[in-house]
Length: 401
Image 1 (cartoon, rainbow, N blue to C red):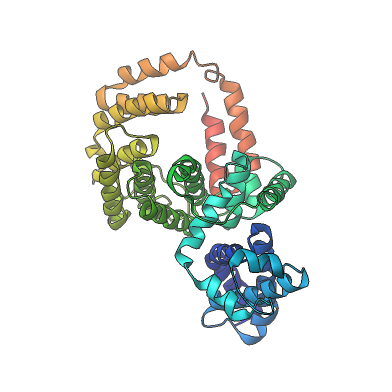
Image 2: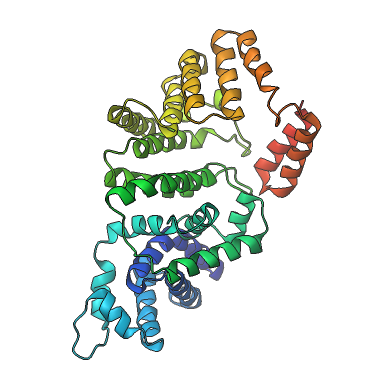
């Protein structure tokens, strides 16, 4: 294996293992910033050694072992021993933290670590922007540049946002744990928002030549499924999982032979993943069984399910979709929802009915500004680093009316 091949392997390993690595370390050092630094240190050691020794059989375990040793050194060097001794409840006669103790602590309850990292990243003490940026960084594996592109802001702004978020969490001594009871319910909406944002970053990538980053969708799905197990009676958790499962089922059909985007109604439905559709429909049924009124994620999942059930585009139940968009407009009203409802109504009952809704939208202050829309599409095309997205935005800039 060449050095270049090894570096590519290291990058792949890091994408897969970094979140678990950071989560496990955070539970030990009780500082998410320090945990990420320790994980990065382990990555640097891998970049130095693996080109010579080869990639280990279990690279994730290798990185974890290296990071744990760095954690021990950091605790001793920074004289954090007594505080860590008290926090972790160790009763060592000489008050020295031994490696086996760290091994036991970091390997115990591994299943909760990622979920705990989600909740600490989404803690209400942080602003919404900070929660999203920190979670994308720590769990989504996005670079600071990719996050900046997602928000269309300067990279230093995102970097400072992440640094301040870590400092805030450390200064407030936020416990690294999964919240329970009323606190869990209060913080769940923020977590769902962030998980879906991670999914969308994979579903329509902000940078690169590829339209999608399926691995990131898989990360979000995994987090969503963990949340569903943790909160079996929370309808919107199952609604979000259903929405992501059904959307993920289309990944293979969303691009053509040259990587160009293919819109939903033009997709080859034989390429859809019907195993994921089945899982999505089951999650949707679970969500709808838990309460009478449906939330925005459950409603969006129900709309996606209408498309998923149609084996051909002309079999789509547009009247059902129109009704669901009407329900969604009552829960989460916006011009975008109304425009989608107009399309569904037009498909179900004829163009004149759909156009009546569009005409009503023209009173919206953000609509009817054609030249500005054209200019914004063109500006967005310049800002994006995703080749496929740039081509799509340029086409929309030309066709904006």
